[in-house]
Length: 508
Image (tube, rainbow, N blue to C red):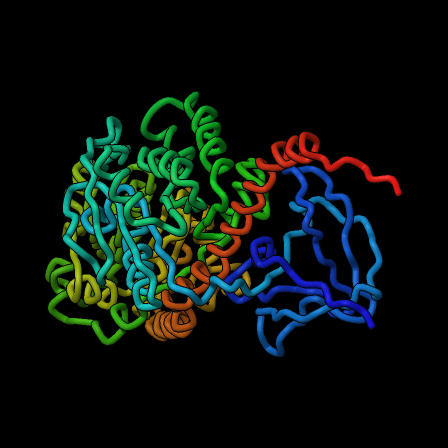
């Protein structure tokens, strides 16, 4: 009778790399490979793989991307070589800690409670649903505008200073004795930091001091911004900083598949350590039902019968908003409304001086929902979006979108959905942008058809599901990689210990 082989839960492999929110894990059903407990050094070829002929260690559940444990007979195993870990990501095993409450520390810079940016809704919803799932959460962020708590999460403000090149962005290292002691007393199971920035260095140091797994989520593609704000020669050093940070982390999360491919191409870290943070949208707050005649009067400057183009977002020079001036020159019958604020607002107002353009400044709550739903078309000319949450919100509001075919926007309106849920134009091409806008502005039936399809598409995405994936799969993967790295670091000491205290041979 064969003896079953047990699995060490501490070395249970992490979830496999998934290409999209809907992609399921692909696992061979006839032969399955189990990594042996000897752990190889990074990028080294592992020694061997144990392969089963008749039973699988992991069997796939029907109609599910999850996997369950089984047993394997030792007599059925053969040893075969296997590839580098980067080429063959470890399969998913449900960890015993996946359903237990965790203690999670988030380092977020700038504050998702005061600074308006693309990840504000992402982190606020993330905190909300982590708390709903029973986790204890502490948030360390820049000091300005930090409430005492958020959905029961403990918030700690760190003294900040303005970014030299972008005065409205507060930065903080978050390495004061007060913060270090607060985090240490919290006893986190995992630390999660937004990247890039200054605070991510503090999070890295604290994670290493406390021996805690570290996840970094990449939200701002700084190498694209650098040439617009400073010197182009700084791009290469910035890539080196990004590589240093993310190779020190146990897992990297990115908001879009396009950005993941770019980080993989730049070899920022191992490919199987770059995972997707699925998109989500609050489809209740952003809904066509918020269409409002009074808001349309405001956005169109008293001409609600005119075609109305809407743009929502931070007004920064990197957003390519100057292109919209040339677009509007070819659409004299249309009106445009800019909802949001930012360092480029003054220049943009001067650029649109004498034109039918309205600048509302910051809107929030129901006013923001009304602003989305009261327009005719949403336009996004930016080529630097890591995802483009405002595009998701516009589509959820039933607004057809015309966006640059670049960055994370490609994930929102892929080629097979173009003309169904929205349109993409060649980045920087005014004529192509106008050719996509005109039919929507002048054909109400087309506009309503595209808007309805966009709304139906957005109803598929949910922040709760995205948070659950990070919590139960990606965090488990980070913990697995961290345990593996820790075991690798201990191997030389274990070898020395065995050599120093080797038992003498006994001859009978």
